[in-house]
Length: 116
Image (cartoon, rainbow, N blue to C red; front, side, top):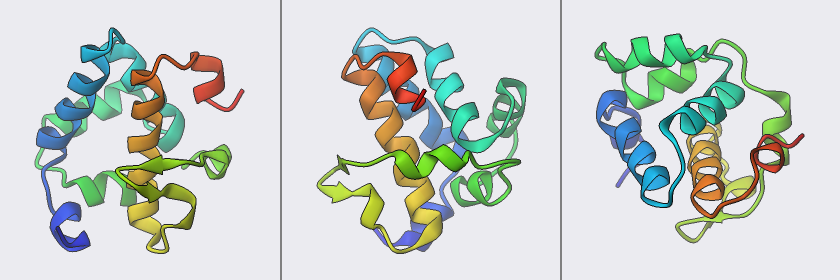
C-alpha cells in the first residue's frame, strides 16, 4: 500500500483498529488515547473530535498540535519495519503510533511507553 493511500485513509476508520488491537490484549481505550495524546499533543477531546470528522490519517498527524520531542526515543520494529529508519517523516509519525500501541498490547508499563 503506497504512502499516499495510507495518508488518505479516514482517521475514523484506522484509529478504532488500533484501539481494538490494544483491547484484545487487555488494555483500555483510555490508554490508547493517552499514548496518542502524548505523541501528538492533541487532547483526548481533540482526538475524539477528529474521529467525528472526515479527518484523514495523514492530516491527523500533519495538524498535530505539538509532536512530542521524546518520540524520537521510540525504536524497534512494527510489521518488520524499523521505525527509527523510516525516511518519510509523516510515515515515521504513523509508525511511532503503531509502535506505541504495540507496546501497550505487549503489556509494557505506561511509564516506559511514554519514555518517562
